Image 1 (cartoon, helix red, strand yellow):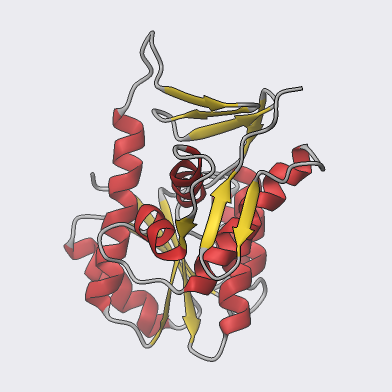
Image 2: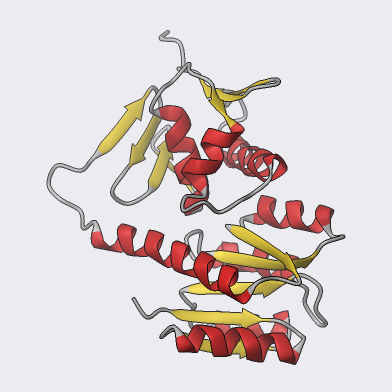
Length: 236
């Protein structure tokens, strides 16, 4: 799958090097020097994947991520961030990013993570709807395992693919505790390392999205020292 990747980065040498590496792998690349220029382009046509710096002139990466998520919940976003920007990294994940890399980063690792996210998109696109859709329902929650979509009380919950995969890991065994390591393996396959705090940020964002539809949503419980579990809604 030769997808279209947008690189939004104010340092030209990084834009050039990342673009060269991705083009060598067969991807189409568009580069932008700041968030404002990228946003103007995205309003007309969305890329298949975005590599996004945080600190940029005119419009920073966090604001661009926030705006991009108003257009699409499924376009994968990889943040590039400095090592001393832990707060910004976590905030970026809460806004809907799928992954991040700290500068200076390995070009080989960046390309590998891009390939992982495109494989996810390929799986979603290749699973065309059938007459008997593969659904997982528990209480007021329904997961469509073919389309990677979730519905709560018959309303769509706008989850990213990473968030959906983590929620699925919890829902398929309700009442059972999933450790952060298990959720990491589900949301970030192919041995991609992320921290416990990254998992916590994704869970926080999932809860927030459900709470925006139902203020009483409390089905994802924290089991301190272990991880998280999904509890069924008691029958009335």
